[in-house]
Length: 77
Image (cartoon, rainbow, N blue to C red; front, side, top):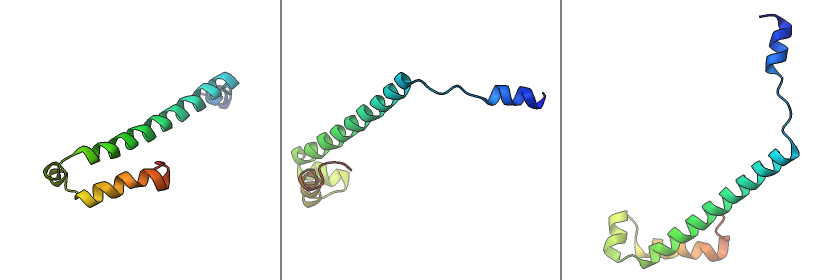
């Protein structure tokens, strides 16, 4: 393989604006889906009994603090 062949095979065309927009939109939607899933899981913790929480290795107080994160952190983490 010559140097010219290497340059030709390593050059990639730039993605189109539409492709970049689709990729950005997909990443944004994936982020929102993960935020929603974490929010839903924290709310589900409140519905568990103390025995079920103990099986998970957390206390009622820890579950309440996790659910409280929704309000003061905006559920971003």
